[in-house]
Length: 165
Image (cartoon, rainbow, N blue to C red; front, side, top):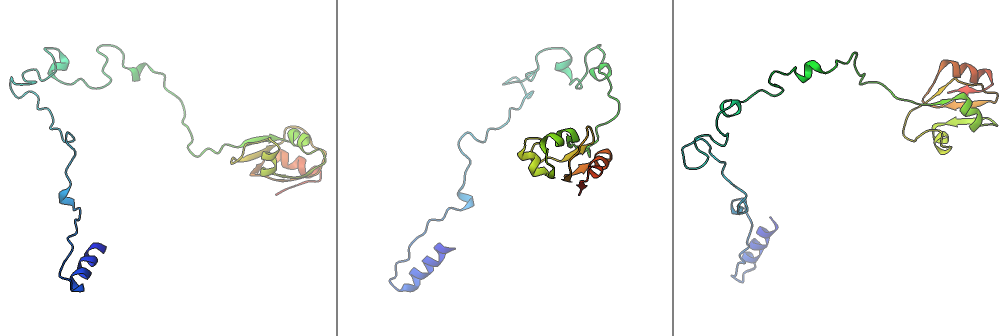
């Protein structure tokens, strides 16, 4: 569009010489040499790939296609493989677990327990959900703010004077 404006400006300037602008257009494009190769037409006479059409002579594979999975008299793989029971829940949520005994070691004076703080202390990995479980005892007051807390852990934390939020 800008080139056309230049041409129009040159014509209207009055010097009488209009510049010719070379524009690349879609109909100028051609595929690279060798990029367009015609497919091999097999089974069309004796010239090239005629008669057997590249399939060799005789046998099932020369005459027609055999369906995938056919094993020629053997028991099919699908039939001889063990069948799994149940299913895999696509909505399962995985938590990283931290037990109360671990919190007692990490926080001997008590304090606030957050996911970021647990990551900083190396108890859990970052960017993952954290759940506190009730294995072990705790004697200090903890203010726990993580993704999930089990019922037994919550009872023990509240009994020790802490809170779950």
